[in-house]
Length: 180
Image: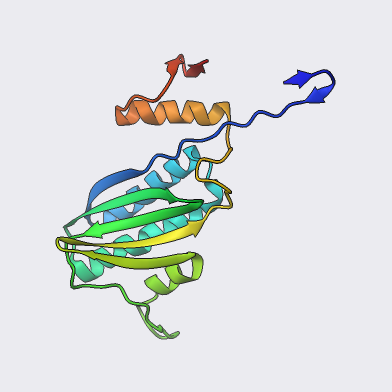
């Protein structure tokens, strides 16, 4: 947009609504969860943290598979905590707690939480009577959780995700574009 010789830059604020996904802890689910994470972060305009977020999802879900058991019902929950991306996995076993091990070069396992600790701003475990929540938070570089990013392509991607999820997005959408 141009006004009287001055360029005005319009940036869209992105709605980064929290989402949950129930899954069964199976090795083949890890790749699907990574793809879903990549898709959502692309829509949110957070592509810069996609690799780190996918690694966290892989490690957190793998911990459930290894230490709680294959076939365990679990939930992946993703949200913004201020300007940080929060990734959580919920599982029903309150006894199998993730720990940060000092895995050496010869160790065949035990590096998952060390990887998360290295790339996350913080991580932890919350115990509830019926489940535990293992979480981590990644820095996004945003100054606010719904800070400006994207533009028309983000609106189109949000509309597509809304159609796929069967949810209605705010505003009127026609032929892949938002009517304003």
